[in-house]
Amino acid sequence: MVSSGIDDAAGARIVPADAISDNEMGLDIGPQTVARYAEIIRSAKTILWNGPMGVFEKDAFAAGTISIAKAVAYSEAISIVGGGESAAAIAKAELEKMITHVSTGGGASLALLSGHVLPGVAALNDKLKTRTPVIAGNWKMHNTWSEARALARAIRKGVGDTARVEVVIAPPFTALPVAAEEINGSGVTLAAQNVHWEDKGAFTGEISTAMLKDAGCGMVILGHSERRQYFGETDELVNRKARAVLRAGLQPIICIGETLSERESGKHEETVSKQLAGGLDGLTDEDLLRIIFAYEPVWAIGTGRTASPETAQEMHGFIRGWLFDKFGKNAGAVRILYGGSVKPDNIDALMRQPDIDGALVGGACLEAESFLRIIRFQL
Ligand code: PEP
Image (tube, rainbow, N blue to C red):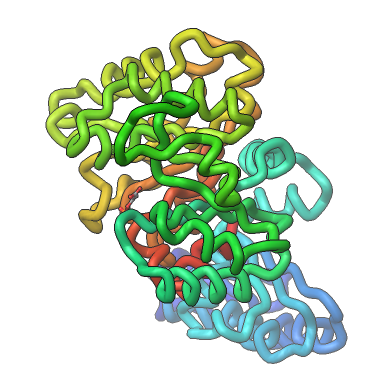
C-alpha cells in the first residue's frame, strides 16, 4: 500500500511492489503479501516477529500489520514478538495473551537469540553464578509456639527445593526450638534476631552464641534499625557482636541504613559508610566472605514505602564499592540484601538489580503465602 505521505490516507492505493511511483512511499503491505506471509506463518513451528509491516499507528496503514499480528497470534507455533513497535502493534490488536512471549527488546532480543552477549543479562547471570540469593524473614516479636510451628511448617512445605535461593527464618528466641524442629532436614536456615557479644556470664536477659547454636541457628541478624533505635545499639556493639558470631562459626546478617532526615539532607552515603566502618572494624577479608549485609533504609521499614529499585541499586552499588575499597575483590562475592517493605509485588523488580542479592523481609514474612511468593521471585 502506497501513498504520497503518512498523512495522505485519501491518496492510498495498492500496487505491485515494482509499480511504486517516485513521489510515493510504501506504508503497509497489501492483501497479497499478507496472504503469502499468513501461509508461511500457518506452517511455522516457531515465529520470531520483529518489526511491524507498515505505519500501523495510522489506521489507514494498519491493516497489514494487524493481519500479521492475528496470523501470529492464532498460529499454533511458539511465538516471540520483539521490539517496542511490534509489541505496540500486538497491544493495539489486543492479542498479547495469545503470544508466547512479548518483549520490548527488539534488536537486543535478536542479538540474544543469535548467541550474542547482552551486558545487562550477563551481569544478572554473573550475579546468580557467584552469589546465591538469600530471602530472610524477620519475624520480630511475633508468634507464640503454636503460631511459629504452623508458619515454619507452611514455609517448609512451600519451599520445596531451595537450591536456587537460600531461605532464612528468624523467629523470636522462644520460638527457635519449635521452628528448628519444623524445618529440620530442609534447606531452610534458622536465624536469631540478636545475640550478646560475650560467650557467657552474668548478663541477665541475654542469649549467647552457644545457646543459639544449640537451638539450631546458623545465622544472626545484627544491628537491625529497631535495635539501634529502641535499644541503643551502636556500631561498636554491632562490631563486638559480629566478632562473637564469627568466632562461634555462625553467619552475621549486618543491617545498615539511613533515616529519612539523613536521606533528605543528602547524608545517606555518609551514614552507611560510618555504619560499615564501625561494624566491620578489625575484621579481615576472610571474615567478609561470611557476612551478609542488609541495606534497610529506616524510612522504608514497616512503612509500606519501598525504595525504588533504582534507589536501592544505587545504595547497594555504593556499599559494594565501599567494600571493594576496604577489602578488595572478595566484595564481589558478598551478598547484600535489601530490606524495607518488600512485598510479593515489588520483589521481582528489586531482584533484577545487579547488586541486590536478596531481601530481608518483615511484615510480608508473617504469612506463608506472601513469603513464599517473595522466595519465588522472577527475574
Ligand atoms: C525489617 O524488619 O527488616 C523489615 C524490612 O520490615 P518490613 O519488611 O515490614 O518493612
